[in-house]
Image 1 (tube, helix red, strand yellow):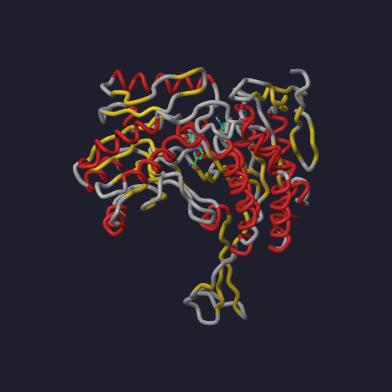
Image 2 (tube, protein in one colour):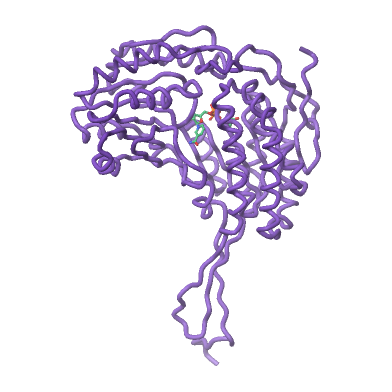
Length: 488
Ligand code: NAD
């Protein structure tokens, strides 16, 4: 146990221990083994990282698009070289199955390559002036320091998503990964970018211990250099952050949870719909923001679909995420497993029934399907962050859309049907930021505006994030000073 490496933070281009020398254990969700001792950052570390990012900002903001692109492309090659190592760390730190780990690394490499084009997007426009002889235009400027806060679930890809947009548009970044994934969601990103030649201070990574975010957050909010907080995580945490950001007039980009409906219309191919539902509900053991939380089936197909879905769910292999045969790995912590168990019990107490699953072996939660959950129960509207999904019958496509929208969230939604025209017509009524026809809910592509509506958040990364991560400055020029109605 004592052989686990001690991992320093990355501040101002240097690898440094926490200011007060403390560390905390970073453990594996599957077997609890110690992966590393990570630096336990405090307010002093956060301040040092913010200062380093602020100092690096003017020079980075002045770099050419080509220079940024070159670094991103080099980073893609470095990440490709280190792919096995990153995949193994995703499994060790976050319990990602082999499939999900491989997906994240491949998507991260692709994102780096695509993001190499983003610096060229930061353009302004020529304005139509009403004053003869005046040429007016806008230019886009980066904001300054962006503070990125990421979760542990899609640990690697979401960390790249958090840093690449601000960096592409000329901002500098302090990244604070989840306490549960300091290496794969933070320190490995810094290693890759350092090797790729990112100048010192442009990206900084600090790693606080569980329960110690308070002083770090104080430094962030009280610093005038931090202009935007890019947060990916849960809605309850976001509410606290947004409230405080309002007081300090800081921008926020919020990528939050969802209660994602998957609608199966009566004319859908049942086998394929079941495949889609299994993936949507249980991929990464239901710990993805876009996992389907409710499968809404048009009544004529409900019994047939549900029988097949239940039968296939019961065969999903649970176990060691390092085993390629495993489809359902561990939940991230004991607390998470206990919470999912309590939420299932609440749904049952409210009148719901368990069609399969509902049990757990430590952090290994059985994939679970609930039916008959009344609309008034929390589980009918709130995310259960584990392998738990509800099924519900709808009287028509329109009724399915009504049920789908009966939540305060609006992240991802999907409709499966043999009639894409009818499905698309219904899809226009769905209240979600990402809507697919004949694709399941865990969808989205690099460069698409991946984000939510309603209480699933606001703001975007990538091309759609240009407005969030830059500011417009209006300018004008005319040949001579104008005439003014002032007494001579
Ligand atoms: P969380 O809200 O508990 O934590 C997210 C991050 O916020 C962590 O880094 C944590 O350290 C930090 N944090 C917690 N309290 C804070 C505070 N007071 N000030 C500043 N930072 C604070 O979420 P989680 O459990 O890590 O992640 C799961 C949640 O994230 C789910 O709700 C999921 O749906 C959501 N999520 C959304 C997306 C998306 O793109 N929309 C992607 C992944 C996850």
